[in-house]
Image (tube, rainbow, N blue to C red; front, side, top):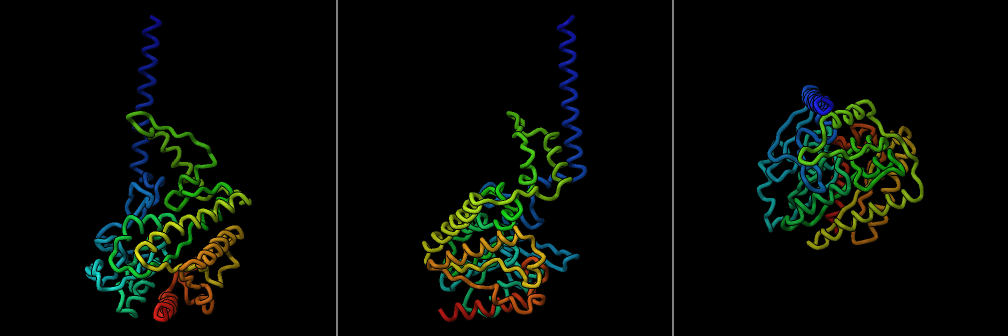
Length: 340
């Protein structure tokens, strides 16, 4: 009798667990919150490597609210509506320049025709210009993308690198910051203070009810808990930047190309509105970038170039260039390369 009762309760428990799993799965799918734990954009897709995400091939989307279109090529690069598809990407007879990094070189908030890579191409027909940037990419992701997608491009002469992360992550997370932190993994960072265990069952994976709990926490919080940086975390942060820069420097040096580094450029009219620790992290990143240029690297000081008329040179208080700002940067970059 006692055995029957025990068996009955075991069946009930199994049934309840199964029911909770079904309900959790239904909530996740019905409310479309399955995207919360991994942040990707409509024109990007997940990868199983250090990039985490990359651009989709041959994709075309228009954002009415932002009055901006994003068109990608078969090479997973951003192109303008008038471009056919960079058919000369591997033409050994034409010099190339690759723009690498995040939303700033990508031209976020404007059409490709108003972005820095396009305007530079327009004024420099002796180059094939490749827009290989992806919004929200970190330094480490940019380095990984170069190694995986671009290092075999024929006759690549210059790589223009401009990134914001890891400064935004370090400015938010402080001493809790880790090397792998980036915007793609923001959900993991929001969950970090809760010290949740890694609950993965053999042959099943992570239970849906556990995924649902984590997603509900993320939806409720939205912002990081702040942990003030310290000397040890500052050193980790700077060493990480140097390590990643050395990686891409070596890759670029191996193919006899030259690295161009541009600093994070916050509009001068918006600096007073930036959080102290965020601005501190940006300044530390820029200092490391400038110091790294003691190697055979071009440090392109976009800060001094865009300081004047900053309200006209940017479309927001972050860092994103207007067509005028992109034109100013393109003109100065052309002068620098023409004088080499």
